[in-house]
Amino acid sequence: MKMINDLQAQAIARSRGLSRAAESLGMRVEPRPAGGRFRALLRRGERGQAILEMAFLMPLLLVIVMGVCYFGIAMNNYLSLQSAVTAGAVNLAENQSLATPVPNACTVATTVIQGASNLKPSQITITYPTSGSCAGGLVAGTPVTVNATYPCVLPIYGMNFTSCTLGATSTQPAAQ
Image 1: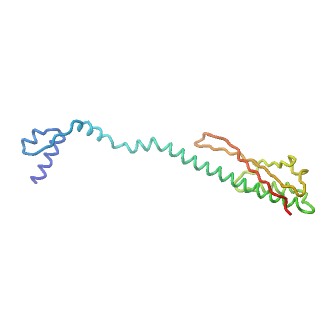
Image 2: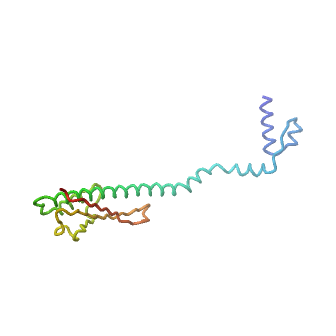
Image 3: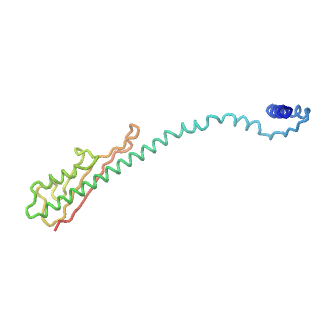
């Protein structure tokens, strides 16, 4: 019991800076460094520091995470568009090389392109650079080029940081 009282007395003496009183009781108390009290006051207010730092950084981290997610969606749309344009151009090149070409080859190619997964068909713009349209510009033995564009909007928390257009082009050689 005496030891607990001695430890309590020493703690009280240190916290109040009563080194003389502690010495009169026969305890040895080391003096504090010059800035000790100031550092003790600063340390006392560190309880909410982590929550405050998190409150400052969380919005920034959420914006970065949302930006990465929307970039991933845009990249997925681009890859879907490129794949669909390639499939449409291959289909058109195969139809062009037939002895009796399919009369609606461009419609079939357009349907193939608009069938792209997770893209809205009404927003896909398809062009055939041979003559502006597919109907009169197909010549047997020439490569087929198909272009398509798709709008890309990157909203983060309701703000449109950038609006872009995804474009894909595919040139397929004439099938033999």
